Length: 185
Image (cartoon, rainbow, N blue to C red):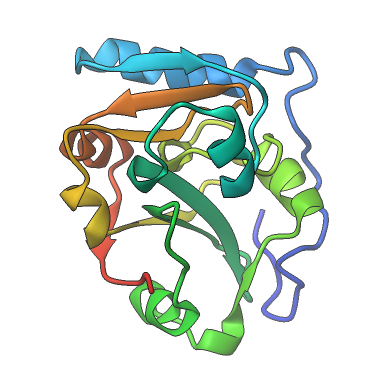
């Protein structure tokens, strides 16, 4: 499916989240990580959607959390931006990395995150770049260079609000297949 150049990035798609299992996306992402053979820890916790929730609900060092923010370009491509949870996306820098004008890049609404990615807002994982849960195939994933400075491990979304993956930043980058760039502030 391709969107017209004037389509809203938050327009509903013709495919919705997997109706068979509400956690099918999580299961596919977990399978990807397990098959990689890379060391990781899967943490179970209270549902956590925002960084404020994380500070309250999780015992993790919030400076080691990697959040993934979903955007769409005017032509309908999905852009995922993985960055340290305590930082913000610099839209102009991210747009430049994606090869579009800043005005052609918009964050997905919560409804569009669920429709296009099959997960609740706050549950997006940088591993969604691997095709799990995506409505159409074209997705660009950028990992902020700062993420690679997180030590010894980073925490990231796993496709569920009550699960978090912990793994080395270099392993996360290898698994997600994203491109690095500087787009945080």
